[in-house]
Length: 144
Image (cartoon, rainbow, N blue to C red; front, top):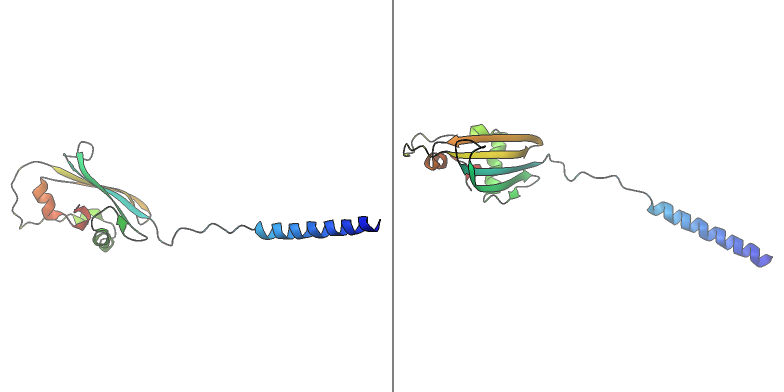
């Protein structure tokens, strides 16, 4: 009988240790956000055509600006800096150089932006009369 009581005491001690150990590992840590910054990820395209719906896309890149510049854009740091300087107002980036000499040929080029800028959904397009005019007006954002 003495061995039975010792066995029972040992079993109770082991059960208590297991429960204490399980309680220690069962606590969950709350999910942490990935960062403190609102996301900024954009798909930029350049295509031949008069509108985004009819243009044939020739080039496309991804530009990420938050939390750090990146993507496959050739100059993400410069492009993100330009966008931050205008608070994501893509229309203000298109400034046609009036001193640039370009042929007056109608061969439209359309640029588009779709994605998220500073946590808000954005979509923008602009059509230039030809590639020469686009190159004269393009900033680092559309230089790819």
